[in-house]
Image (cartoon, rainbow, N blue to C red; front, side, top):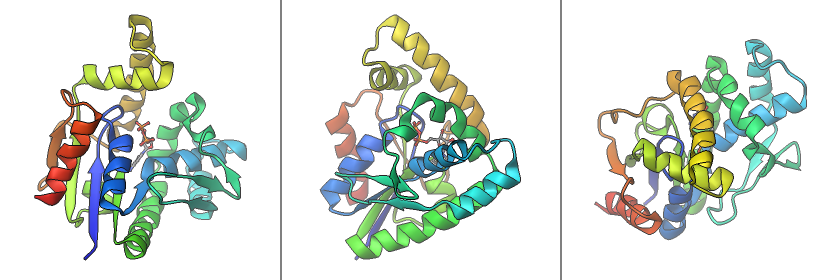
Length: 223
Ligand code: CDP
């Protein structure tokens, strides 16, 4: 039978890398919902839209010509035929994405798209690991397995700092803190991870390395 695994968590919790590894081990497809908000942001900027124009951005969301690969070992994303895998990770996108993600019409559209994708991927591959910030609560509250991946702020900043700046020395940590804290604050209407929602299992990765985090999630899936 199919297994739908929903994983939410803040930046630096290890959500994306752990989710991909879990999908690989379970031999099911993978859905990165953050990449969808990032791709929409990229497309709006590409077209010169004013991100504070709620209606224009909502229309762009409905029209977004997005194609994603759901192979956890080769996630790929195109917008209108252009590969945007690298572009959507740029700082300018990370700084702008919250403006798009807090648009309620965008969220409604993304929820619909993500529900359809979860169903399609699950039928095609026998299951799906879908990750983001509101998957356990809004997009797939009826998922078979729902996990909140957390980590202490110190652990999250150290991981993000290595990703963004290749180091977790003091100056890299400080730059990361500014970027991540600013985005968390902007995202606070979308997601708050201080307490897990009812029925959601918390996996704290503060003291776990990557492989241990993957195992901890697989333990919840197999429980
Ligand atoms: O870079 P990080 O892993 O922290 O985030 P991401 O998963 O790439 O998501 C980027 C942004 O998309 C977040 O900061 C949120 O603004 C938004 N997002 C959302 O609103 N809902 C989701 N389910 C996933 C992402």
